[in-house]
Length: 245
Length: 60
Image 1: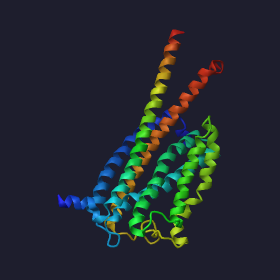
Image 2: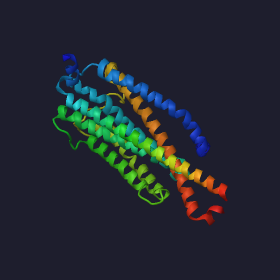
Image 3: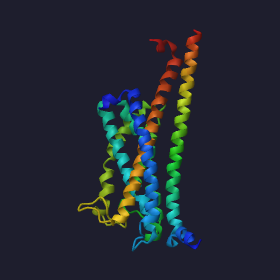
Image 4: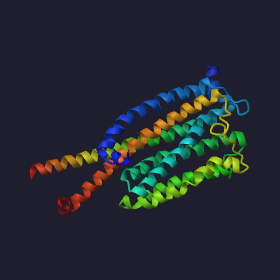
């Protein structure tokens, strides 16, 4: 499967089909999700209208975890099988993934201020999410911190794999420690405890974010492939003798 | 008119709700624009490079 995709021309042909579908899903799900989030879903009996922050905060948190997991899988493929496309995939997903982590932190603050009376607290869930954001930043800095990008691939991939330990900590932090953050109400043993009228907009917004993540990651992967091709051509031009061999 | 104002006021939590959505939209739009602009610039540079090379080969 991965060998099949290793050919950049074949990869571009496949993504040329997936990309417009992902964009269409993003636009359709976003429009429907906005309608559900602002007009069709009720206010919460305890939190009132602030519950509408949940429709952006929770899907962003799911996507921040999913993106990191996808990058870590790609990093394992790169470290074990030296698959160049896996490295490019991880690099392409880093900025969209970091964006989701940042959105989670900022929207969480905007939700926490009226509900908890504070913008920030060093709670287990919030702190572990902040660490995830720093892991994203660390990966980006390490991967792009070398003059030749390939040299940053190995240390950055190792950081990704080590950082996976943070994912279960984020997920179960609300169960393992006493936290201000509320417990899981969707992805929990025994099924979702959230009302279906609120679950639907949450899932539709998550689909919109997934579509956006796939679209932007494909776009960035194709850009990185073009960048590498350009670098090779420039190196060959600088040393014409080697280029002719 | 008053129902519109009520909608934007969001039960007195309008600042927090609209700021959350605004910040999220801003980040997603910024990343999308950055990715599109970077893609355009790199592909333009690559095309120019390939065109120049073809012209050079032709002259040789």
